[in-house]
Image (cartoon, rainbow, N blue to C red; front, side, top):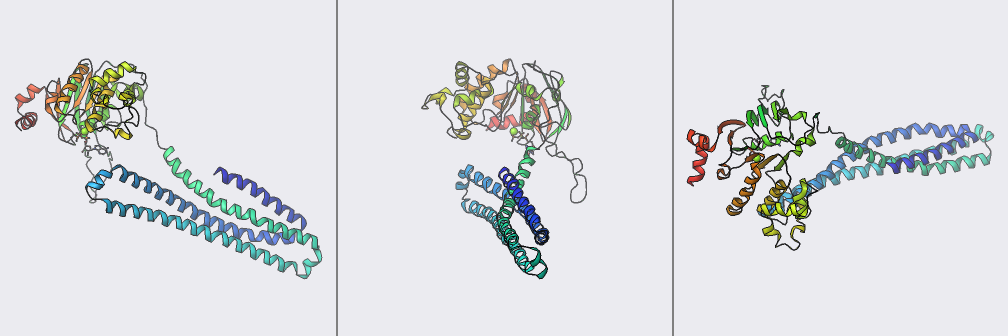
Length: 455
Ligand SMILES: Nc1ncnc2c1ncn2[C@@H]1O[C@H](COP(=O)(O)OP(=O)(O)OP(=O)(O)O)[C@@H](O)[C@H]1O
Ligand SMILES: [Mg+2]
Protein backbone atom coordinates (compact mmCIF):
# COMPACT_ATOMS: atom_id res chain seq x y z
CA UNK A 1 0.00 0.00 0.00
CA UNK A 2 2.78 2.42 0.81
CA UNK A 3 4.35 1.76 -2.58
CA UNK A 4 0.97 2.39 -4.17
CA UNK A 5 0.56 5.66 -2.31
CA UNK A 6 3.94 6.86 -3.60
CA UNK A 7 2.97 6.14 -7.20
CA UNK A 8 -0.44 7.71 -6.76
CA UNK A 9 0.97 10.94 -5.37
CA UNK A 10 3.82 11.19 -7.89
CA UNK A 11 1.89 10.29 -11.01
CA UNK A 12 -1.25 12.22 -10.09
CA UNK A 13 0.84 15.35 -9.66
CA UNK A 14 2.41 14.70 -13.04
CA UNK A 15 -0.96 14.16 -14.69
CA UNK A 16 -2.46 17.29 -13.12
CA UNK A 17 0.56 19.36 -14.20
CA UNK A 18 0.33 18.16 -17.78
CA UNK A 19 -3.40 18.80 -17.96
CA UNK A 20 -2.87 22.29 -16.55
CA UNK A 21 -0.30 23.04 -19.24
CA UNK A 22 -2.62 21.72 -21.94
CA UNK A 23 -5.42 24.00 -20.82
CA UNK A 24 -3.04 26.89 -20.77
CA UNK A 25 -2.09 26.29 -24.39
CA UNK A 26 -5.53 25.45 -25.80
CA UNK A 27 -8.60 24.95 -23.68
CA UNK A 28 -10.71 23.75 -26.61
CA UNK A 29 -8.51 20.79 -27.40
CA UNK A 30 -8.00 19.97 -23.76
CA UNK A 31 -11.72 20.00 -23.13
CA UNK A 32 -12.18 17.18 -25.59
CA UNK A 33 -9.63 15.24 -23.67
CA UNK A 34 -11.30 15.96 -20.32
CA UNK A 35 -14.68 14.80 -21.60
CA UNK A 36 -13.21 11.35 -22.06
CA UNK A 37 -12.09 11.18 -18.43
CA UNK A 38 -15.44 10.22 -16.81
CA UNK A 39 -15.61 7.18 -19.07
CA UNK A 40 -12.18 6.07 -17.93
CA UNK A 41 -13.08 6.78 -14.32
CA UNK A 42 -16.14 4.59 -14.62
CA UNK A 43 -14.12 1.68 -15.97
CA UNK A 44 -11.50 2.06 -13.24
CA UNK A 45 -14.17 2.15 -10.56
CA UNK A 46 -15.88 -0.96 -11.88
CA UNK A 47 -12.60 -2.83 -12.16
CA UNK A 48 -11.45 -1.82 -8.66
CA UNK A 49 -14.51 -3.26 -7.07
CA UNK A 50 -13.92 -6.53 -8.81
CA UNK A 51 -10.22 -6.53 -7.91
CA UNK A 52 -11.01 -6.07 -4.27
CA UNK A 53 -13.51 -8.88 -4.21
CA UNK A 54 -11.21 -11.32 -6.00
CA UNK A 55 -8.25 -10.36 -3.84
CA UNK A 56 -10.24 -11.14 -0.74
CA UNK A 57 -11.16 -14.54 -2.15
CA UNK A 58 -7.53 -15.21 -3.03
CA UNK A 59 -6.42 -14.46 0.48
CA UNK A 60 -9.05 -16.80 1.86
CA UNK A 61 -8.02 -19.52 -0.61
CA UNK A 62 -4.34 -19.03 0.22
CA UNK A 63 -5.11 -19.41 3.91
CA UNK A 64 -6.91 -22.64 3.18
CA UNK A 65 -3.99 -23.97 1.16
CA UNK A 66 -1.57 -23.42 4.04
CA UNK A 67 -3.89 -24.78 6.68
CA UNK A 68 -4.66 -27.88 4.61
CA UNK A 69 -0.95 -28.47 4.06
CA UNK A 70 -0.17 -27.93 7.73
CA UNK A 71 -2.90 -30.29 8.82
CA UNK A 72 -1.65 -33.03 6.52
CA UNK A 73 1.98 -32.60 7.52
CA UNK A 74 1.17 -32.66 11.21
CA UNK A 75 -1.06 -35.67 10.88
CA UNK A 76 1.10 -37.57 8.43
CA UNK A 77 1.21 -40.65 10.62
CA UNK A 78 -2.56 -40.87 10.77
CA UNK A 79 -2.79 -40.26 7.04
CA UNK A 80 -0.33 -43.06 6.32
CA UNK A 81 -1.92 -45.48 8.78
CA UNK A 82 -5.44 -45.05 7.55
CA UNK A 83 -4.45 -44.84 3.90
CA UNK A 84 -5.72 -41.29 3.58
CA UNK A 85 -3.20 -40.19 0.95
CA UNK A 86 -5.67 -40.09 -1.90
CA UNK A 87 -8.28 -38.31 0.15
CA UNK A 88 -5.77 -35.71 1.30
CA UNK A 89 -4.41 -35.43 -2.20
CA UNK A 90 -7.86 -34.81 -3.62
CA UNK A 91 -8.68 -32.29 -0.95
CA UNK A 92 -5.44 -30.43 -1.46
CA UNK A 93 -5.94 -30.43 -5.18
CA UNK A 94 -9.43 -29.05 -4.83
CA UNK A 95 -8.27 -26.24 -2.57
CA UNK A 96 -5.36 -25.48 -4.88
CA UNK A 97 -7.68 -25.42 -7.83
CA UNK A 98 -9.89 -22.93 -6.11
CA UNK A 99 -6.89 -20.75 -5.44
CA UNK A 100 -5.77 -20.97 -9.06
CA UNK A 101 -9.27 -20.17 -10.22
CA UNK A 102 -9.35 -16.96 -8.20
CA UNK A 103 -5.92 -15.98 -9.43
CA UNK A 104 -6.98 -16.52 -13.04
CA UNK A 105 -9.92 -14.24 -12.44
CA UNK A 106 -7.60 -11.56 -11.15
CA UNK A 107 -5.27 -11.89 -14.11
CA UNK A 108 -8.24 -11.78 -16.49
CA UNK A 109 -9.64 -8.67 -14.88
CA UNK A 110 -6.26 -7.02 -15.07
CA UNK A 111 -5.64 -8.10 -18.66
CA UNK A 112 -9.06 -6.81 -19.60
CA UNK A 113 -8.97 -3.47 -17.86
CA UNK A 114 -5.62 -2.13 -19.06
CA UNK A 115 -6.31 -2.45 -22.81
CA UNK A 116 -9.85 -1.12 -22.42
CA UNK A 117 -8.56 2.01 -20.78
CA UNK A 118 -5.87 2.38 -23.40
CA UNK A 119 -8.32 1.93 -26.25
CA UNK A 120 -10.52 4.65 -24.83
CA UNK A 121 -7.49 6.91 -24.58
CA UNK A 122 -6.48 6.14 -28.18
CA UNK A 123 -9.94 7.06 -29.43
CA UNK A 124 -9.62 10.30 -27.59
CA UNK A 125 -6.37 10.96 -29.37
CA UNK A 126 -7.88 10.12 -32.75
CA UNK A 127 -10.74 12.44 -32.05
CA UNK A 128 -8.32 15.26 -31.23
CA UNK A 129 -6.58 14.76 -34.58
CA UNK A 130 -9.91 14.93 -36.27
CA UNK A 131 -11.08 18.02 -34.41
CA UNK A 132 -7.92 19.95 -34.93
CA UNK A 133 -8.36 19.62 -38.68
CA UNK A 134 -11.74 21.33 -38.53
CA UNK A 135 -11.79 24.83 -39.99
CA UNK A 136 -12.52 26.71 -36.78
CA UNK A 137 -9.72 25.21 -34.75
CA UNK A 138 -7.14 25.31 -37.50
CA UNK A 139 -7.29 29.08 -37.32
CA UNK A 140 -6.77 29.48 -33.60
CA UNK A 141 -4.05 26.91 -32.93
CA UNK A 142 -0.51 27.31 -34.11
CA UNK A 143 1.48 24.32 -35.26
CA UNK A 144 3.72 24.69 -32.18
CA UNK A 145 0.81 24.58 -29.73
CA UNK A 146 -0.64 21.59 -31.48
CA UNK A 147 2.60 19.64 -31.30
CA UNK A 148 2.96 20.55 -27.61
CA UNK A 149 -0.52 19.30 -26.77
CA UNK A 150 -0.01 16.06 -28.64
CA UNK A 151 3.29 15.55 -26.86
CA UNK A 152 1.67 16.15 -23.50
CA UNK A 153 -1.10 13.73 -24.33
CA UNK A 154 1.36 11.03 -25.23
CA UNK A 155 3.26 11.81 -22.06
CA UNK A 156 0.02 11.37 -20.12
CA UNK A 157 -0.40 7.78 -21.24
CA UNK A 158 2.39 6.34 -19.17
CA UNK A 159 1.38 7.86 -15.81
CA UNK A 160 -2.23 6.94 -16.51
CA UNK A 161 -1.23 3.34 -17.10
CA UNK A 162 0.82 3.37 -13.94
CA UNK A 163 -2.15 4.72 -12.04
CA UNK A 164 -4.44 1.98 -13.28
CA UNK A 165 -1.83 -0.68 -12.56
CA UNK A 166 -1.22 0.60 -9.09
CA UNK A 167 -4.92 0.54 -8.51
CA UNK A 168 -4.93 -3.26 -8.58
CA UNK A 169 -2.03 -3.33 -6.16
CA UNK A 170 -3.80 -0.88 -3.94
CA UNK A 171 -6.95 -2.94 -3.94
CA UNK A 172 -4.95 -6.02 -3.05
CA UNK A 173 -3.46 -4.15 -0.12
CA UNK A 174 -6.90 -3.00 0.94
CA UNK A 175 -8.23 -6.56 0.86
CA UNK A 176 -5.27 -7.71 2.97
CA UNK A 177 -5.91 -4.89 5.42
CA UNK A 178 -9.52 -5.92 5.77
CA UNK A 179 -8.61 -9.44 6.82
CA UNK A 180 -5.73 -8.36 9.04
CA UNK A 181 -7.83 -5.79 10.83
CA UNK A 182 -10.65 -8.23 11.34
CA UNK A 183 -8.15 -10.19 13.45
CA UNK A 184 -6.57 -7.17 15.14
CA UNK A 185 -9.95 -5.73 16.01
CA UNK A 186 -11.06 -8.87 17.84
CA UNK A 187 -12.21 -8.13 21.31
CA UNK A 188 -9.50 -8.63 23.90
CA UNK A 189 -9.89 -11.11 26.70
CA UNK A 190 -12.01 -9.31 29.26
CA UNK A 191 -10.05 -8.46 32.37
CA UNK A 192 -12.61 -7.22 34.84
CA UNK A 193 -10.10 -7.40 37.67
CA UNK A 194 -9.85 -4.73 40.30
CA UNK A 195 -8.01 -6.69 42.94
CA UNK A 196 -4.43 -7.80 43.25
CA UNK A 197 -3.66 -11.27 44.48
CA UNK A 198 -0.12 -11.93 45.47
CA UNK A 199 -0.35 -15.40 46.89
CA UNK A 200 -3.70 -17.03 47.55
CA UNK A 201 -4.36 -18.80 50.82
CA UNK A 202 -5.93 -21.72 48.99
CA UNK A 203 -9.72 -21.62 49.34
CA UNK A 204 -11.75 -22.60 46.31
CA UNK A 205 -15.53 -22.57 46.13
CA UNK A 206 -17.88 -23.32 43.24
CA UNK A 207 -21.43 -22.10 43.90
CA UNK A 208 -24.14 -23.45 41.61
CA UNK A 209 -21.99 -23.07 38.54
CA UNK A 210 -23.66 -23.63 35.19
CA UNK A 211 -21.73 -23.45 32.00
CA UNK A 212 -22.35 -24.26 28.34
CA UNK A 213 -19.73 -23.86 25.62
CA UNK A 214 -22.41 -22.61 23.27
CA UNK A 215 -24.34 -20.24 25.39
CA UNK A 216 -27.14 -19.19 23.02
CA UNK A 217 -30.20 -18.39 25.00
CA UNK A 218 -32.40 -17.72 22.01
CA UNK A 219 -31.49 -20.59 19.72
CA UNK A 220 -34.33 -22.40 18.03
CA UNK A 221 -34.26 -25.75 16.32
CA UNK A 222 -35.93 -26.62 13.00
CA UNK A 223 -39.34 -26.99 14.63
CA UNK A 224 -38.96 -23.56 16.19
CA UNK A 225 -38.66 -24.84 19.73
CA UNK A 226 -36.23 -23.22 22.10
CA UNK A 227 -33.05 -25.27 22.16
CA UNK A 228 -32.12 -26.40 25.60
CA UNK A 229 -28.50 -25.62 26.33
CA UNK A 230 -26.35 -28.62 26.74
CA UNK A 231 -24.68 -27.77 29.98
CA UNK A 232 -21.07 -28.86 30.23
CA UNK A 233 -21.40 -28.05 33.92
CA UNK A 234 -24.80 -28.27 35.57
CA UNK A 235 -25.26 -26.78 39.03
CA UNK A 236 -21.80 -27.67 40.30
CA UNK A 237 -21.03 -26.69 43.90
CA UNK A 238 -18.14 -27.67 46.14
CA UNK A 239 -15.67 -26.17 48.56
CA UNK A 240 -12.00 -26.80 49.13
CA UNK A 241 -9.85 -25.66 52.03
CA UNK A 242 -6.15 -24.83 51.83
CA UNK A 243 -3.99 -27.90 51.43
CA UNK A 244 -6.86 -30.18 50.50
CA UNK A 245 -6.90 -32.40 47.46
CA UNK A 246 -10.01 -32.78 45.37
CA UNK A 247 -10.32 -35.54 42.82
CA UNK A 248 -12.69 -35.44 39.87
CA UNK A 249 -13.66 -38.76 38.42
CA UNK A 250 -16.27 -39.66 35.87
CA UNK A 251 -16.84 -40.63 32.32
CA UNK A 252 -15.22 -39.01 29.32
CA UNK A 253 -16.97 -35.78 28.50
CA UNK A 254 -18.56 -35.38 31.91
CA UNK A 255 -17.12 -31.90 32.43
CA UNK A 256 -13.98 -32.48 34.50
CA UNK A 257 -11.59 -30.49 32.34
CA UNK A 258 -14.23 -27.83 31.89
CA UNK A 259 -14.31 -27.19 35.62
CA UNK A 260 -10.57 -26.50 35.69
CA UNK A 261 -10.80 -24.33 32.56
CA UNK A 262 -13.35 -22.16 34.36
CA UNK A 263 -11.06 -21.78 37.36
CA UNK A 264 -8.34 -20.39 35.10
CA UNK A 265 -10.94 -18.19 33.40
CA UNK A 266 -10.37 -19.56 29.92
CA UNK A 267 -14.15 -19.27 29.88
CA UNK A 268 -16.49 -17.41 32.15
CA UNK A 269 -19.16 -19.33 34.00
CA UNK A 270 -22.61 -18.74 32.53
CA UNK A 271 -24.32 -18.72 35.90
CA UNK A 272 -23.17 -19.12 39.47
CA UNK A 273 -20.01 -18.04 41.21
CA UNK A 274 -16.47 -19.29 41.52
CA UNK A 275 -14.58 -17.96 44.51
CA UNK A 276 -10.95 -18.03 45.50
CA UNK A 277 -10.25 -17.00 49.08
CA UNK A 278 -13.84 -15.81 49.27
CA UNK A 279 -13.60 -13.40 46.32
CA UNK A 280 -15.14 -13.95 42.91
CA UNK A 281 -12.41 -14.83 40.44
CA UNK A 282 -13.67 -12.16 38.02
CA UNK A 283 -12.54 -9.57 40.54
CA UNK A 284 -8.91 -10.54 40.45
CA UNK A 285 -6.62 -9.31 37.74
CA UNK A 286 -6.36 -12.12 35.20
CA UNK A 287 -2.61 -12.22 35.38
CA UNK A 288 -2.65 -12.50 39.17
CA UNK A 289 -5.32 -15.16 39.05
CA UNK A 290 -3.49 -17.39 36.60
CA UNK A 291 -0.28 -16.89 38.47
CA UNK A 292 -1.82 -18.87 41.34
CA UNK A 293 -2.03 -22.07 39.33
CA UNK A 294 0.37 -24.76 38.33
CA UNK A 295 -1.50 -26.62 35.63
CA UNK A 296 -0.74 -29.87 33.89
CA UNK A 297 -3.22 -29.99 31.05
CA UNK A 298 -4.67 -33.09 29.49
CA UNK A 299 -2.82 -32.54 26.24
CA UNK A 300 0.77 -31.67 26.92
CA UNK A 301 2.09 -28.67 25.06
CA UNK A 302 5.85 -28.35 24.66
CA UNK A 303 7.85 -25.70 22.90
CA UNK A 304 10.62 -26.02 20.37
CA UNK A 305 13.31 -25.33 22.92
CA UNK A 306 15.62 -27.14 25.32
CA UNK A 307 14.33 -29.49 28.00
CA UNK A 308 15.53 -27.07 30.69
CA UNK A 309 13.71 -24.10 29.16
CA UNK A 310 10.55 -26.13 28.76
CA UNK A 311 10.66 -27.06 32.42
CA UNK A 312 11.31 -23.47 33.45
CA UNK A 313 8.54 -22.07 31.25
CA UNK A 314 6.42 -20.92 34.18
CA UNK A 315 9.39 -19.62 36.15
CA UNK A 316 12.02 -18.21 33.80
CA UNK A 317 14.13 -16.96 36.69
CA UNK A 318 14.62 -20.48 38.09
CA UNK A 319 18.20 -21.48 38.81
CA UNK A 320 19.75 -24.54 37.20
CA UNK A 321 19.69 -26.32 40.57
CA UNK A 322 15.94 -25.79 40.87
CA UNK A 323 15.42 -27.07 37.35
CA UNK A 324 17.50 -30.14 38.04
CA UNK A 325 15.57 -30.81 41.27
CA UNK A 326 12.25 -30.61 39.41
CA UNK A 327 13.59 -32.78 36.61
CA UNK A 328 14.71 -35.32 39.17
CA UNK A 329 11.33 -35.46 40.93
CA UNK A 330 9.57 -35.93 37.61
CA UNK A 331 12.06 -38.63 36.58
CA UNK A 332 13.30 -36.67 33.62
CA UNK A 333 16.98 -37.12 34.42
CA UNK A 334 16.51 -40.84 33.71
CA UNK A 335 16.18 -40.17 30.03
CA UNK A 336 17.77 -36.73 29.80
CA UNK A 337 21.11 -38.16 30.86
CA UNK A 338 21.07 -40.41 27.83
CA UNK A 339 20.58 -37.47 25.48
CA UNK A 340 23.57 -35.83 23.85
CA UNK A 341 23.28 -32.52 25.66
CA UNK A 342 21.30 -33.60 28.70
CA UNK A 343 18.82 -31.00 29.86
CA UNK A 344 20.11 -28.62 27.22
CA UNK A 345 18.89 -30.89 24.42
CA UNK A 346 16.42 -29.29 22.04
CA UNK A 347 13.27 -31.39 21.97
CA UNK A 348 11.86 -30.27 18.63
CA UNK A 349 8.50 -28.88 17.67
CA UNK A 350 5.98 -29.74 20.38
CA UNK A 351 8.54 -32.10 21.89
CA UNK A 352 8.61 -34.37 18.84
CA UNK A 353 11.79 -36.09 20.04
CA UNK A 354 10.17 -37.36 23.24
CA UNK A 355 7.86 -40.28 23.90
CA UNK A 356 4.33 -39.70 25.19
CA UNK A 357 5.28 -40.51 28.76
CA UNK A 358 8.43 -38.41 28.60
CA UNK A 359 6.43 -35.44 27.38
CA UNK A 360 4.09 -35.83 30.30
CA UNK A 361 7.00 -35.86 32.71
CA UNK A 362 8.23 -32.55 31.32
CA UNK A 363 4.78 -31.08 31.89
CA UNK A 364 4.80 -32.35 35.46
CA UNK A 365 8.28 -30.94 36.10
CA UNK A 366 7.02 -27.59 34.79
CA UNK A 367 4.24 -27.64 37.37
CA UNK A 368 6.56 -28.89 40.13
CA UNK A 369 8.91 -25.99 39.51
CA UNK A 370 6.45 -23.15 39.74
CA UNK A 371 5.64 -22.62 43.32
CA UNK A 372 1.94 -21.83 42.97
CA UNK A 373 -0.68 -22.23 45.71
CA UNK A 374 -3.01 -24.27 43.48
CA UNK A 375 -2.16 -27.36 41.53
CA UNK A 376 -4.35 -28.78 38.77
CA UNK A 377 -3.42 -32.15 37.36
CA UNK A 378 -5.61 -33.16 34.44
CA UNK A 379 -4.78 -36.78 33.64
CA UNK A 380 -1.20 -35.85 34.40
CA UNK A 381 0.15 -39.37 34.71
CA UNK A 382 -2.06 -41.23 32.25
CA UNK A 383 0.74 -41.97 29.79
CA UNK A 384 3.25 -43.27 32.31
CA UNK A 385 4.20 -46.83 33.04
CA UNK A 386 3.11 -48.14 36.43
CA UNK A 387 6.53 -47.90 37.98
CA UNK A 388 7.33 -44.32 37.04
CA UNK A 389 3.75 -43.37 37.82
CA UNK A 390 4.26 -44.60 41.37
CA UNK A 391 7.51 -42.65 41.74
CA UNK A 392 6.05 -39.48 40.29
CA UNK A 393 2.94 -39.92 42.37
CA UNK A 394 5.17 -39.75 45.44
CA UNK A 395 6.70 -36.51 44.23
CA UNK A 396 3.27 -35.10 43.45
CA UNK A 397 1.93 -36.13 46.82
CA UNK A 398 4.71 -34.22 48.58
CA UNK A 399 3.82 -31.24 46.45
CA UNK A 400 0.12 -31.56 47.23
CA UNK A 401 0.68 -31.50 50.97
CA UNK A 402 0.84 -27.74 51.26
CA UNK A 403 -1.19 -26.86 48.20
CA UNK A 404 -4.82 -26.95 47.26
CA UNK A 405 -4.99 -29.45 44.45
CA UNK A 406 -7.47 -30.62 41.90
CA UNK A 407 -6.66 -33.97 40.42
CA UNK A 408 -8.49 -35.45 37.48
CA UNK A 409 -7.88 -39.11 36.91
CA UNK A 410 -9.41 -42.15 35.32
CA UNK A 411 -7.13 -44.53 37.20
CA UNK A 412 -8.78 -44.57 40.61
CA UNK A 413 -5.74 -46.01 42.37
CA UNK A 414 -4.06 -42.63 42.01
CA UNK A 415 -6.71 -40.67 43.88
CA UNK A 416 -7.59 -42.88 46.81
CA UNK A 417 -5.92 -40.52 49.27
CA UNK A 418 -7.80 -37.42 48.10
CA UNK A 419 -9.66 -35.48 50.79
CA UNK A 420 -12.69 -35.21 48.58
CA UNK A 421 -13.77 -37.17 45.55
CA UNK A 422 -16.40 -35.82 43.20
CA UNK A 423 -18.04 -38.12 40.70
CA UNK A 424 -19.30 -36.28 37.62
CA UNK A 425 -21.79 -37.37 35.01
CA UNK A 426 -23.01 -35.23 32.13
CA UNK A 427 -21.92 -32.05 33.88
CA UNK A 428 -23.60 -32.92 37.17
CA UNK A 429 -22.08 -33.98 40.47
CA UNK A 430 -23.66 -37.32 41.20
CA UNK A 431 -21.66 -38.27 44.27
CA UNK A 432 -19.12 -36.75 46.57
CA UNK A 433 -17.19 -37.93 49.61
CA UNK A 434 -13.97 -39.66 50.54
CA UNK A 435 -12.78 -42.90 49.06
CA UNK A 436 -14.12 -44.90 51.99
CA UNK A 437 -17.51 -43.19 52.33
CA UNK A 438 -18.12 -43.54 48.62
CA UNK A 439 -17.22 -47.22 48.69
CA UNK A 440 -19.54 -47.75 51.64
CA UNK A 441 -22.30 -45.95 49.78
CA UNK A 442 -22.00 -48.55 47.05
CA UNK A 443 -23.00 -46.14 44.28
CA UNK A 444 -21.42 -45.01 41.04
CA UNK A 445 -17.94 -44.65 42.50
CA UNK A 446 -18.01 -48.09 44.08
CA UNK A 447 -19.11 -49.49 40.75
CA UNK A 448 -16.27 -47.77 38.91
CA UNK A 449 -13.86 -48.94 41.56
CA UNK A 450 -14.96 -52.56 41.45
CA UNK A 451 -14.84 -52.51 37.71
CA UNK A 452 -11.22 -51.34 37.69
CA UNK A 453 -9.99 -53.64 40.42
CA UNK A 454 -11.77 -56.79 39.38
CA UNK A 455 -10.21 -56.76 35.96
N1 LIG B 1 -13.83 -26.23 23.44
C1 LIG B 1 -15.01 -26.84 23.49
N2 LIG B 1 -16.04 -26.38 22.74
C2 LIG B 1 -17.25 -26.98 22.78
N3 LIG B 1 -17.55 -28.02 23.55
C3 LIG B 1 -16.57 -28.53 24.32
C4 LIG B 1 -15.26 -27.97 24.32
N4 LIG B 1 -14.49 -28.67 25.20
C5 LIG B 1 -15.31 -29.64 25.69
N5 LIG B 1 -16.55 -29.56 25.18
C6 LIG B 1 -17.70 -30.39 25.53
O1 LIG B 1 -17.95 -30.24 26.92
C7 LIG B 1 -18.21 -31.47 27.53
C8 LIG B 1 -17.29 -31.67 28.71
O2 LIG B 1 -15.95 -31.76 28.25
P1 LIG B 1 -14.70 -31.93 29.21
O3 LIG B 1 -13.50 -31.69 28.41
O4 LIG B 1 -14.89 -31.10 30.42
O5 LIG B 1 -14.82 -33.46 29.60
P2 LIG B 1 -13.88 -34.32 30.56
O6 LIG B 1 -14.72 -34.72 31.71
O7 LIG B 1 -12.63 -33.60 30.85
O8 LIG B 1 -13.60 -35.58 29.66
P3 LIG B 1 -12.25 -36.45 29.51
O9 LIG B 1 -12.21 -37.40 30.66
O10 LIG B 1 -12.46 -37.19 28.25
O11 LIG B 1 -11.12 -35.52 29.48
C9 LIG B 1 -18.06 -32.53 26.47
O12 LIG B 1 -19.35 -32.96 26.11
C10 LIG B 1 -17.40 -31.85 25.30
O13 LIG B 1 -17.99 -32.27 24.10
MG1 LIG C 1 -10.71 -33.81 30.24
